[in-house]
Figure 1 (cartoon, rainbow, N blue to C red):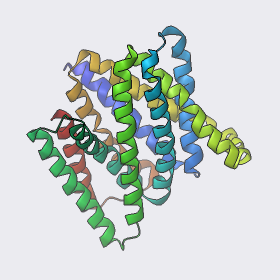
Figure 2: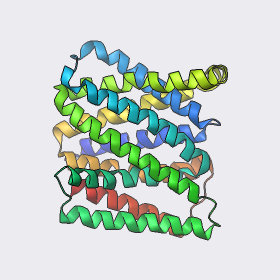
Figure 3: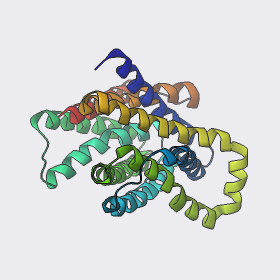
Length: 279
Protein backbone atom coordinates (compact mmCIF):
# COMPACT_ATOMS: atom_id res chain seq x y z
CA UNK A 1 0.00 0.00 0.00
CA UNK A 2 1.49 3.34 -1.06
CA UNK A 3 2.02 6.22 1.36
CA UNK A 4 -0.62 8.33 -0.41
CA UNK A 5 -3.26 5.60 -0.04
CA UNK A 6 -2.36 5.15 3.64
CA UNK A 7 -2.79 8.89 4.26
CA UNK A 8 -6.14 8.94 2.46
CA UNK A 9 -7.43 5.97 4.46
CA UNK A 10 -6.26 7.63 7.68
CA UNK A 11 -8.15 10.72 6.49
CA UNK A 12 -11.23 8.55 6.01
CA UNK A 13 -10.84 7.27 9.58
CA UNK A 14 -10.59 10.86 10.81
CA UNK A 15 -13.76 11.81 8.89
CA UNK A 16 -15.61 8.86 10.42
CA UNK A 17 -14.59 9.87 13.93
CA UNK A 18 -15.52 13.49 13.15
CA UNK A 19 -19.15 12.78 12.29
CA UNK A 20 -19.49 10.72 15.47
CA UNK A 21 -18.08 13.64 17.46
CA UNK A 22 -20.69 15.90 15.83
CA UNK A 23 -23.53 13.53 16.77
CA UNK A 24 -22.27 13.16 20.33
CA UNK A 25 -21.70 16.91 20.70
CA UNK A 26 -25.29 17.87 19.85
CA UNK A 27 -27.93 18.34 22.53
CA UNK A 28 -30.43 15.99 20.84
CA UNK A 29 -28.76 12.81 19.61
CA UNK A 30 -31.79 11.62 17.59
CA UNK A 31 -31.95 14.86 15.65
CA UNK A 32 -28.20 14.74 15.10
CA UNK A 33 -28.43 11.27 13.55
CA UNK A 34 -31.29 12.45 11.33
CA UNK A 35 -29.24 15.40 10.08
CA UNK A 36 -26.31 13.07 9.52
CA UNK A 37 -28.49 10.83 7.33
CA UNK A 38 -29.74 13.94 5.51
CA UNK A 39 -26.23 15.22 4.79
CA UNK A 40 -24.96 11.88 3.50
CA UNK A 41 -28.08 11.42 1.38
CA UNK A 42 -27.90 14.87 -0.19
CA UNK A 43 -24.24 14.32 -1.04
CA UNK A 44 -25.06 10.96 -2.62
CA UNK A 45 -27.92 12.53 -4.59
CA UNK A 46 -25.39 14.72 -6.42
CA UNK A 47 -23.50 11.60 -7.54
CA UNK A 48 -26.46 9.41 -8.53
CA UNK A 49 -27.00 10.97 -12.00
CA UNK A 50 -23.47 9.89 -12.97
CA UNK A 51 -23.63 6.23 -11.93
CA UNK A 52 -25.70 3.34 -13.35
CA UNK A 53 -28.76 1.97 -11.62
CA UNK A 54 -28.03 -1.06 -9.43
CA UNK A 55 -29.28 -4.43 -10.64
CA UNK A 56 -32.85 -5.34 -9.61
CA UNK A 57 -31.67 -8.46 -7.79
CA UNK A 58 -30.03 -6.33 -5.08
CA UNK A 59 -33.23 -4.36 -4.25
CA UNK A 60 -34.29 -6.67 -1.36
CA UNK A 61 -30.87 -6.17 0.22
CA UNK A 62 -31.14 -2.41 -0.29
CA UNK A 63 -34.43 -2.50 1.62
CA UNK A 64 -32.94 -4.68 4.36
CA UNK A 65 -29.97 -2.33 4.67
CA UNK A 66 -32.30 0.67 5.03
CA UNK A 67 -34.15 -1.03 7.87
CA UNK A 68 -30.84 -1.89 9.55
CA UNK A 69 -29.65 1.69 9.16
CA UNK A 70 -32.86 2.99 10.73
CA UNK A 71 -32.24 0.74 13.73
CA UNK A 72 -28.58 1.83 13.69
CA UNK A 73 -29.36 5.54 13.92
CA UNK A 74 -31.96 5.04 16.65
CA UNK A 75 -29.69 2.73 18.63
CA UNK A 76 -26.68 5.03 18.24
CA UNK A 77 -28.69 8.02 19.46
CA UNK A 78 -29.66 6.10 22.59
CA UNK A 79 -26.10 4.92 23.18
CA UNK A 80 -24.59 8.41 22.88
CA UNK A 81 -27.30 9.76 25.17
CA UNK A 82 -26.12 7.47 27.96
CA UNK A 83 -22.35 7.09 27.55
CA UNK A 84 -19.11 8.84 26.61
CA UNK A 85 -17.95 8.74 23.02
CA UNK A 86 -14.68 7.07 24.01
CA UNK A 87 -16.67 4.14 25.40
CA UNK A 88 -19.59 3.98 22.98
CA UNK A 89 -17.66 4.60 19.76
CA UNK A 90 -14.96 2.11 20.72
CA UNK A 91 -17.49 -0.64 21.38
CA UNK A 92 -19.52 0.09 18.25
CA UNK A 93 -16.54 0.18 15.92
CA UNK A 94 -14.58 -2.55 17.63
CA UNK A 95 -17.11 -5.30 18.20
CA UNK A 96 -18.92 -5.04 14.86
CA UNK A 97 -16.07 -6.78 12.91
CA UNK A 98 -16.03 -9.57 15.50
CA UNK A 99 -19.79 -10.11 15.21
CA UNK A 100 -19.57 -10.00 11.42
CA UNK A 101 -16.82 -12.63 11.48
CA UNK A 102 -19.02 -14.89 13.63
CA UNK A 103 -21.99 -14.35 11.30
CA UNK A 104 -19.89 -15.20 8.25
CA UNK A 105 -18.73 -18.33 10.07
CA UNK A 106 -22.35 -19.40 10.49
CA UNK A 107 -22.88 -18.71 6.78
CA UNK A 108 -19.98 -21.00 5.91
CA UNK A 109 -16.85 -18.81 6.12
CA UNK A 110 -15.43 -19.36 9.63
CA UNK A 111 -12.73 -17.02 11.02
CA UNK A 112 -9.13 -18.15 10.61
CA UNK A 113 -6.62 -18.61 13.41
CA UNK A 114 -5.35 -15.01 13.06
CA UNK A 115 -8.89 -13.66 13.32
CA UNK A 116 -9.47 -15.70 16.47
CA UNK A 117 -6.46 -13.97 18.03
CA UNK A 118 -8.05 -10.62 17.20
CA UNK A 119 -11.35 -11.75 18.71
CA UNK A 120 -9.52 -12.64 21.93
CA UNK A 121 -7.99 -9.15 22.06
CA UNK A 122 -11.40 -7.61 21.39
CA UNK A 123 -13.01 -9.57 24.21
CA UNK A 124 -10.19 -8.52 26.55
CA UNK A 125 -10.71 -4.87 25.64
CA UNK A 126 -14.48 -5.09 26.11
CA UNK A 127 -13.99 -6.76 29.50
CA UNK A 128 -11.59 -3.97 30.51
CA UNK A 129 -14.09 -1.30 29.46
CA UNK A 130 -16.86 -3.00 31.41
CA UNK A 131 -14.55 -3.33 34.43
CA UNK A 132 -13.76 0.39 34.26
CA UNK A 133 -17.46 1.25 34.25
CA UNK A 134 -18.01 -1.10 37.19
CA UNK A 135 -15.20 0.66 39.06
CA UNK A 136 -16.94 3.96 38.30
CA UNK A 137 -20.04 2.74 40.09
CA UNK A 138 -21.73 0.90 37.24
CA UNK A 139 -23.60 3.97 36.01
CA UNK A 140 -22.45 3.49 32.45
CA UNK A 141 -23.09 -0.23 32.11
CA UNK A 142 -26.36 0.62 30.36
CA UNK A 143 -24.33 2.57 27.82
CA UNK A 144 -22.15 -0.51 27.28
CA UNK A 145 -25.25 -2.58 26.49
CA UNK A 146 -26.67 0.07 24.15
CA UNK A 147 -23.34 0.27 22.34
CA UNK A 148 -23.11 -3.49 21.95
CA UNK A 149 -26.67 -3.51 20.62
CA UNK A 150 -25.61 -0.96 18.01
CA UNK A 151 -22.78 -3.29 17.02
CA UNK A 152 -25.29 -6.02 16.23
CA UNK A 153 -27.13 -3.62 13.93
CA UNK A 154 -23.84 -2.63 12.26
CA UNK A 155 -23.23 -6.32 11.62
CA UNK A 156 -26.65 -6.51 9.97
CA UNK A 157 -26.14 -3.71 7.49
CA UNK A 158 -22.54 -4.76 6.87
CA UNK A 159 -23.68 -8.19 5.71
CA UNK A 160 -26.60 -6.75 3.71
CA UNK A 161 -24.36 -4.20 2.00
CA UNK A 162 -21.55 -6.68 1.42
CA UNK A 163 -23.79 -9.09 -0.45
CA UNK A 164 -25.89 -6.31 -1.99
CA UNK A 165 -22.90 -4.47 -3.47
CA UNK A 166 -21.75 -7.71 -5.11
CA UNK A 167 -25.18 -8.30 -6.67
CA UNK A 168 -25.63 -4.68 -7.75
CA UNK A 169 -22.97 -4.73 -10.48
CA UNK A 170 -21.61 -1.34 -9.34
CA UNK A 171 -20.52 -0.83 -5.73
CA UNK A 172 -20.36 2.98 -6.02
CA UNK A 173 -23.94 3.12 -7.31
CA UNK A 174 -25.10 0.78 -4.56
CA UNK A 175 -23.39 2.87 -1.88
CA UNK A 176 -24.89 6.13 -3.15
CA UNK A 177 -28.38 4.61 -3.23
CA UNK A 178 -27.96 3.41 0.35
CA UNK A 179 -26.98 6.89 1.54
CA UNK A 180 -29.84 8.48 -0.43
CA UNK A 181 -32.52 6.03 0.70
CA UNK A 182 -31.40 6.25 4.33
CA UNK A 183 -32.83 9.77 4.47
CA UNK A 184 -36.43 8.61 4.35
CA UNK A 185 -37.12 5.97 7.06
CA UNK A 186 -35.47 8.01 9.81
CA UNK A 187 -37.03 11.30 8.71
CA UNK A 188 -40.50 9.76 8.49
CA UNK A 189 -40.07 8.58 12.09
CA UNK A 190 -38.65 11.89 13.35
CA UNK A 191 -41.13 14.12 11.53
CA UNK A 192 -44.13 12.10 12.74
CA UNK A 193 -42.94 11.91 16.34
CA UNK A 194 -41.23 15.29 16.84
CA UNK A 195 -41.56 17.22 13.60
CA UNK A 196 -41.75 20.80 14.87
CA UNK A 197 -38.89 20.32 17.31
CA UNK A 198 -36.73 18.74 14.61
CA UNK A 199 -37.32 21.54 12.10
CA UNK A 200 -36.41 24.13 14.73
CA UNK A 201 -33.28 22.15 15.64
CA UNK A 202 -32.39 21.77 11.96
CA UNK A 203 -32.63 25.52 11.47
CA UNK A 204 -30.29 26.12 14.41
CA UNK A 205 -27.70 23.39 13.83
CA UNK A 206 -28.35 22.15 10.31
CA UNK A 207 -25.05 23.24 8.78
CA UNK A 208 -23.02 21.33 11.37
CA UNK A 209 -25.25 18.24 11.27
CA UNK A 210 -25.39 18.03 7.47
CA UNK A 211 -21.61 18.52 7.33
CA UNK A 212 -21.28 15.47 9.55
CA UNK A 213 -23.27 13.45 7.04
CA UNK A 214 -20.98 14.62 4.25
CA UNK A 215 -18.02 13.50 6.37
CA UNK A 216 -19.62 10.06 6.60
CA UNK A 217 -20.15 9.88 2.84
CA UNK A 218 -16.58 11.05 2.20
CA UNK A 219 -15.18 8.50 4.62
CA UNK A 220 -17.06 5.65 2.99
CA UNK A 221 -16.21 6.85 -0.51
CA UNK A 222 -12.48 7.04 0.21
CA UNK A 223 -12.56 3.56 1.71
CA UNK A 224 -14.31 2.12 -1.34
CA UNK A 225 -11.82 3.77 -3.69
CA UNK A 226 -8.86 2.58 -1.57
CA UNK A 227 -10.13 -1.00 -1.74
CA UNK A 228 -9.83 -0.84 -5.54
CA UNK A 229 -6.11 0.03 -5.43
CA UNK A 230 -4.94 -1.71 -2.22
CA UNK A 231 -5.68 -4.98 -0.39
CA UNK A 232 -9.21 -4.85 1.06
CA UNK A 233 -8.16 -6.37 4.40
CA UNK A 234 -5.41 -3.79 4.90
CA UNK A 235 -7.73 -0.88 4.09
CA UNK A 236 -10.41 -2.21 6.44
CA UNK A 237 -7.87 -2.72 9.21
CA UNK A 238 -6.36 0.74 8.81
CA UNK A 239 -9.81 2.32 9.07
CA UNK A 240 -10.04 1.02 12.64
CA UNK A 241 -7.65 3.81 13.64
CA UNK A 242 -10.81 5.93 13.77
CA UNK A 243 -11.09 4.68 17.36
CA UNK A 244 -7.87 6.53 18.23
CA UNK A 245 -9.01 9.70 16.44
CA UNK A 246 -12.31 9.48 18.30
CA UNK A 247 -10.54 9.13 21.64
CA UNK A 248 -8.32 12.16 20.99
CA UNK A 249 -11.15 14.38 19.74
CA UNK A 250 -13.44 13.36 22.61
CA UNK A 251 -10.81 14.62 25.05
CA UNK A 252 -10.10 17.82 23.09
CA UNK A 253 -13.65 18.83 22.09
CA UNK A 254 -16.03 17.07 24.49
CA UNK A 255 -13.97 17.28 27.68
CA UNK A 256 -14.08 13.53 28.29
CA UNK A 257 -11.54 12.08 30.70
CA UNK A 258 -9.42 9.01 30.06
CA UNK A 259 -8.13 6.64 32.71
CA UNK A 260 -5.14 4.34 32.04
CA UNK A 261 -7.47 1.32 32.07
CA UNK A 262 -9.80 2.89 29.50
CA UNK A 263 -6.88 3.83 27.22
CA UNK A 264 -5.58 0.25 27.44
CA UNK A 265 -9.04 -1.12 26.68
CA UNK A 266 -9.46 1.16 23.63
CA UNK A 267 -6.06 0.10 22.28
CA UNK A 268 -6.96 -3.59 22.80
CA UNK A 269 -10.26 -3.17 20.99
CA UNK A 270 -8.64 -1.29 18.10
CA UNK A 271 -5.84 -3.86 17.76
CA UNK A 272 -8.31 -6.73 17.95
CA UNK A 273 -10.57 -5.17 15.29
CA UNK A 274 -7.61 -4.64 12.96
CA UNK A 275 -6.47 -8.24 13.38
CA UNK A 276 -9.99 -9.56 12.75
CA UNK A 277 -10.10 -7.54 9.53
CA UNK A 278 -6.72 -8.92 8.45
CA UNK A 279 -7.63 -12.48 9.46
